[in-house]
Length: 449
Image: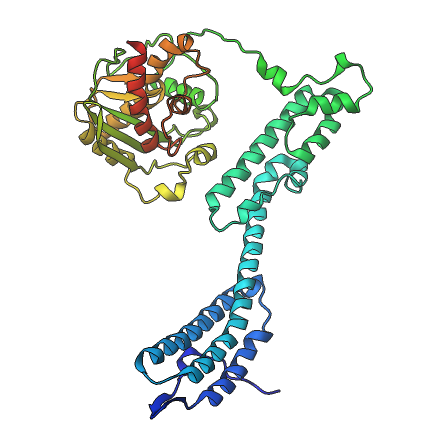
């Protein structure tokens, strides 16, 4: 069988010159024959996921050949004043020869890249779904599981992983709910869930499918969640235990109100918003599975702040920190801050020192900082040998004072930002939360007056 030389851009040499009344392409036939033989290798090669690297290499070489021919065509058009239509056609013929395998390989690479990405996504999904036990396969094989946008090149790995993590978490919660309230209809409810990956409409489904009386139908998740109540507790503990408790409550999605604080304090709280110069800040932290479960205490992974002078933002601060421990997966999903992102960042001690330089003696403002951020930065400052004696104001405390009068549904920062029409560029990132909170402060200041 005849062996053809692999075509190379280095061997593409166009020999052309001008004689009176004509521009000639002397080696066209020879070059065309060389290219026909060389390109036949690409036309007969089968590209799959297993040889994507080879496909990418071949595509790069074909693009180089096409560019060399195109550049030569432009060069001749610029250099010669004589008519070169025949040479142009000859060069365009060679360029078209390259386009055939080039376009084929380009399409195959894109298709196989999607297959490779889909394979990576499903491998991750199977690994994460393992916590669902016997239900894992049915969840990831559901028609409602795979989102085609995950295959878009613009959809980043951290984004589709966050989507999958949420589906798995929601599924775990759904199966737990079914076990608790499903009664004799558990199997039917699970089948309903596998189809939609949602319990929305489960009541109607059971009512239509069941021959039992209406008063024996399943009590819905919505009915259970609709009952809202509260308890007042007085909890005694060390500073460390209280930090842990407040961190867990902050992450629990439960609304809570701190009525009395009997813990020793290094920073003074103020509640009157009668100032227009301050530093608004926010932190993100690792979260914790619980000290009582053997996990380390939560640590700072980001501090973001804006300096406000007479109502205007005049300076910004944003630093990631290496917490010296793993970030809890739920926090990574919320913040999109990963262990890899903070691995080479400065330590918390270094970041808190820089933060102290930035804030000076200014009043600190933040949302829910009394329960979460202040304990974190106070502990970090003490450990780093930094004295923080700044006064602080919690905008959540201000919002509570006007919530009922304004008829607000809740007083979370994202809710207030949307209410006032402020762009919240990246929720659960410290720099973004701090910036939008500074603007919310002035709205609350007006609401209280």
